[in-house]
Image (cartoon, rainbow, N blue to C red; front, side, top):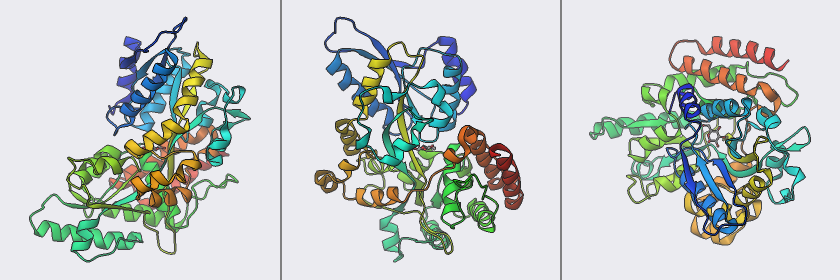
Length: 426
Ligand code: GLC
């Protein structure tokens, strides 16, 4: 659902969020009902997987859990959460939160360090990300990193290597696109990605800039570094893709739109997160066994850079059953559940021990490439921007979307962004 306001108004008017209930198999003396948000049924398998994990916890504990759906995009989910939390609703106990939100939502979340939780088994960088003002506000559930998906069969047929730079991607995409069209595939495109005005576009922008070694938009010393010729060049390059190697429609694309186009065999390259792999390899996929994964291309004199993403589980401080909600979070973020999610749908564990599991590597050899990208992932400026991140990101994706649509010059967009961000993080 693209209109978050309509969605929220609808939910609040019903006081319910498209709930589905997982009944417990055996009933404890005092049965409690919890509600968890688990993402959206229209984004890959995230909702289904959550439902299965929650059912296992219910069977174990005898408590009932309701699943509340969220909107599809991270930006709309944040609007929904802030509404629920600002108004102190006790309707949601456990929230699935984006890696860039701990600072924004911390005052509404329970401090998990007051509970018996072994944080030492998670990637330290994620525990650090989820610790705000000495509070542990969420436990890592799965990691994400931006990747380049490519059509192995088509590169081989055209005798071309996987591109290592943006320049090579451009040339290869244009060449194969024109060859495919001359063979009658009129709707074939070179590169699909996320160009809609939402958090996913900010993730792409961070990659374009970092891959040119042009910094992280806001550095850890809070220096605003977005104004560089490399950043202007990055926006110009991306604008030039529209209508040449990327369809005009990419301006409305989110993750699932890009995946659908690629999965239907309509594109040579795609930027997306690891979750897409298993779906692209499913039996009914047009590209099954025809794809590969690589790090996203480097800019001139740059490096490969994939934005770090991922989702955490947190407990609302308005929950009336906090201890039980913490138990559900502990269970879902535990090693068994993370292993199941990795094996069935490719969601990346946040527990390094699982990365060393030989059984996992044997069953999914492509994971080695993903893990390598994850280790080198680049972050969005959420820690440096603190509570202003929401506004900073909104300004980035809004102005960049205008640039991609030809409504603003790249240089003007960068100058305005610099001025705005400096004001917000002063
Ligand atoms: C993925 C990432 C998340 C990011 C979002 C943007 O869900 O895990 O961190 O904000 O995509 O669309």
